[in-house]
Length: 303
Image: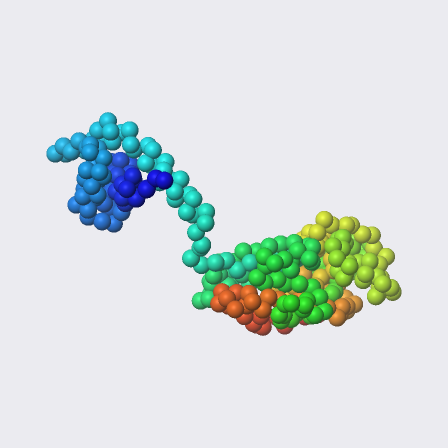
């Protein structure tokens, strides 16, 4: 069995040698390694003594690698790079990331703006987001936190209700003016349901069968976010979750078309696993997102 402690020189001598060959001198290497020039010279000399050959020709104003130094330079650099890559691949980060999962609509309209605020706060930490419209994927074992659409937190998770859901038809102010001038000129901006409890215009129709909106043509958008984007452009009427779109409603970019509001009895919950909430960074993000937003009242559905 090879005794590497005896068959290999001290690792730090190789680090110093590589720095000198790469930077071109003892002075430059000492600045990079935050040590004195004498310390660099001492480590290189130690390696030369171990090898029994000189690695540099030391002139008054120059430093040139000997044939032995040139031969050794590339394999030492490659070995140190390989070692660094291997260590980085298994080294635990100094600060772990908190992984939070949410569907695309919640992420786009509610979570991302608040993560920006969190990133600039005193309790900021690294955050990894997972976006999926598959409810089961949100509750993956890999998630520290999740925002889910439900009537109660799932079993095995702690939960805090972020908002109740209230739906209303919305468009841009220009879109609403156009609708009131010529109702048939706009379309309902619909989207596919990715879960049984999602509500789109089909589900709206069952609860509001006498609504005049149901006489309008429909355009199916690829996502809920796209339906809101087209409503913002005045291209049609979308079904808005008012609390989720509170910023757009507060700014006037979107307005409620009429008073045909629908309270679904469901809401959005921020949930965490009991064991995950013990981490300081996870708990900090949970509390930050749970704090009542000062502008939440602007998300109410109003005429």
